[in-house]
Amino acid sequence: MYVPWLVDAARSTGYPVVEVPGWQTRGHGGMRVVEGVVGHHTATSDSAPGDYPSLDIVTNGRADLAGPLCNLGLGRSGTVYVVAAGCAYHAGASRWLGFLDVNDEFLGIEAESAGAGGWTDAQRDAYPRLVAALLRYMSRGLDRYAGHKDVCLPVGRKIDPVGIDTDWLRERAANPTVTVPQSVEILERITVTPPDGGEHTVRVFLSGSPGSAIVVRPRLGGDGSSKPMWVGGILAWGSDHAGVGHNPAQQPGYDARLTSHRRYDVPGAVWADVRYSAAEPFEIDLVG
Image 1 (cartoon, rainbow, N blue to C red):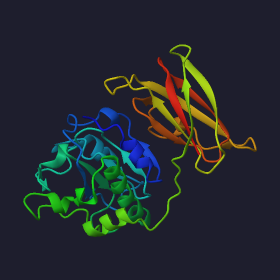
Image 2 (image 1 turned 135 degrees about the vertical axis):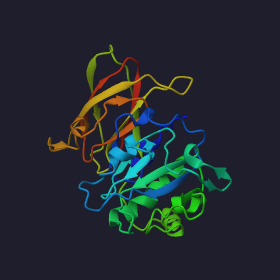
Image 3 (image 1 turned 120 degrees about the vertical axis):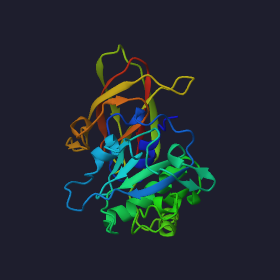
């Protein structure tokens, strides 16, 4: 199976999220089950520029190992990169809590670090939040998180993530010490019925709160799948008629195609125009 809720779990951390184009169908086949999380570091040099310079490698692989090499990446800023919804080659020979060779059973996080124990403050906050969110979405306890160093076979083959103690991360995941503003209150759910399969715009009205957001939900069929739709852009305004939020189409790597629900944050917006293309009715949640 391919895991459709990775973006939702990532967004629930409160940190920025980048959807790597194609993540919904990327993988070495689907996951057999989803039972836990393994933490890693990328071992890319600290001198490499950018927030997540390892993105190409973890997505496309290297000469000796085909990508994807993780399900999610964690940048220096705390930004979460959603890489693959299917099986990723991140753990190799491994065992944890009775699970053997866990690539198709445990999600892998590759966090940007040279492997000398250096982490940004944002990463130290975001890493346990991301682990907690993933385990919450799969309804599993904190014992289902382990570092690569804990699960690898033979024991001692791997040391990552260096500087992130397994017990420390679990404790922080259970008791986060820094509050990241979030909002999950759904104020209203509306149904949009497209007049045809072309491009259209629907106007929605929001609360104007710092947590204002729009969640677009393609309608699921009886088999749990949905036909794709597209969100080409969202233009939002505050009560002073000034533009707020962002147009997602202007983000690097933005994929307008949706096959599962996606959240768009529009803080302070009182109304927004959603540009879409869809062949079937879909829902929009208004969050405040």
